[in-house]
Image 1: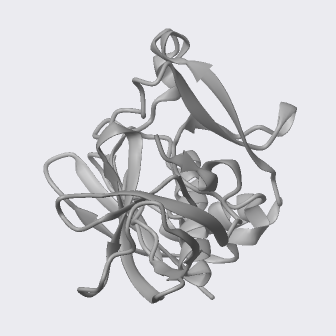
Image 2: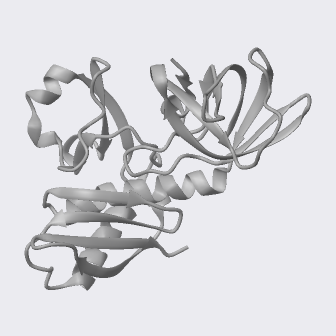
Length: 239
């Protein structure tokens, strides 16, 4: 399996790695990755690989067989052969915006405590789809509450539980459309706040900021009806 460096430190923007394989689709598999692969509504990281023969621009990262991460070049280039030692660098500005949006969406699920039926993370905005038969009466009040939670500067931390422990606590799962990342024997939980100040705890494999104040101010967009009971709520980074 690829060592997931972003899991241990989401603020790590570059690291050395060694090429261990190429995928049939033209991806480059490294032994360790700072690149987050597309999953859970969060886009894969872009960036570049630097090696003795030159620089390879990376368009995105995806999951590959065997628990690996494959980096997809943005243009046809000569591939570094297996065994090559190189330096990987992500587009940190883009990644950090994904982290801010992702944590903000977790807070959105606190402000709107309804089952989540879908979601997507972008560099400027994100959205959650809720099982929401009727639209909220006061969107401005929701925006004030969300920004109030952000301003509390709550810590964002992680812990792990076993698959069986998660199955015994189904209330931890908020998202109806995408099951938690299970199958490895344990599941990562992302916690916002601690002790009496804990406001959210849910399974998540994505990258997040360390404290909520790092998100910055959030603005609500329009709320769209997406089916008989589903409504899409979009939020955006103000800066």
